[in-house]
Each structure stands twice: as C-alpha cells, then as structure tokens.
Image (cartoon, rainbow, N blue to C red):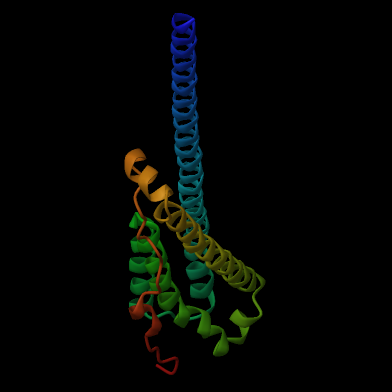
Length: 207
C-alpha cells in the first residue's frame, strides 16, 4: 500500500514538473514572439518615417529646381525693358548656381533664400518701368516664382515635421533600443533660415 502511495506521489510530482516545464516553455515562446513582434513593428515604423523624410527632401528639391528654371526667363524679360546693373545679374547668376549645386535640403533651402535676396532688385524694377509692370510675360513669371516659393515653404514645413516625427519615434522607449539594433539614428537636418538672406542688396534706380 505504501509503495502504491509512493508511486502515485512520484507520478504526481513528475506530472507537476512536466506542467511547470511546459508553462515555462510557453512563457518563453510568448516572450520571444512579443519581443520579436515589438522589434519588427518598431523597425517598420522607423523605416516608413525615414522614407517620409526622404520624400519630403525630394519634394523640396523638385520645387527649387522648378524655381531655378524660371530665373533665366525672368532676367531675359526684365532686360528687354530695363537697364539692369551688371552686379545684379552677377549676383543672381551666382545665387542660382549655388542653388543648383547644393546637395542637402539645408544647403538647398539656404541657397534659395540667397536667391530670393538676389532677385529682389530685379522684381522691384517694375516700380520704375511702367512697360515692365504691365508686361504679361513678366507678370506671369513673377506669379510663378511667388507660387513656387509658397510651395517651397510648404515643403520646408513638411520636411521639418517629418524629421520631428521620425526623431520622436526613434527616441522613445522601447523604440530607442530597437533603433540602436536596427541602425536607425536621430536626424539633425532641421532647416533654419539663413541669417545672411535677410539683408537685401541695395540698388539705385536713378543711376
């Protein structure tokens, strides 16, 4: 009788041990699945937001290229009606060249600000030349430049917002852990206006 009781006790102990072992295995599997799922989800989210930054950067480039393409026609139109100082033409050409050579979004936007400053005297010439002020080609180009600059401003805001959204994602826990493992780093490309672009060159229309 005692042997039977001992046998039942041993079997009960083994059964409990087996169940406990299965519970541990199940918990480990669930843990791995949850951790793996968290990593994959975070990695996908960071990849999507990183692509959004790249897309916003590309949109800036497209709008700035379009704006740069309008400049030669604007210069040519103004020169037909007004005597343009060589220094103004030179400044515009250099600013446009700087825009076309810029690589990063920050460089492009800063170059665009300098181009805005360079073409300002050209746009102001309509104040002293009535024929230019009424020229349809000039007015169309002026409107297109203004419209493109508005689109650049929108693209700039979206670019900064995309970087902020991405950085918020990669810096919060546990994404910060997965970002380090997956190789995602915080981006530092926020755009701030170039201080030099605030000073417009002086031009004397009376000379």
